Length: 71
Image 1 (cartoon, rainbow, N blue to C red):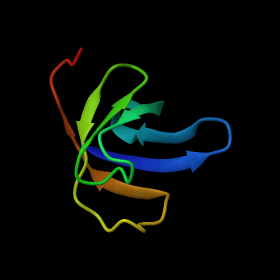
Image 2: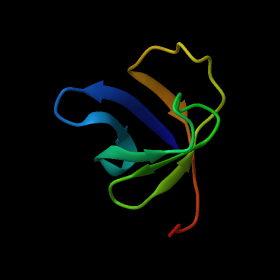
Image 3: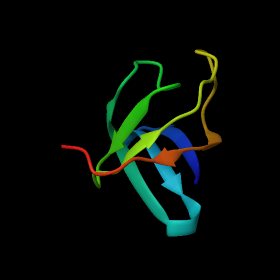
């Protein structure tokens, strides 16, 4: 699914999913740099992000894969 990742003063890092009209803050990340690992958002979804360069600027639209339910 296509998602937009951005940084805002109110939410910090967040994602927006246009097809679902969903905006949620990122609450946990596998890697400090985001890229190449998973992120967890406030609604409980866990998404796999693609590999990207460490200095990639935000906002950016990427393809992410949704994982099954995580504890």
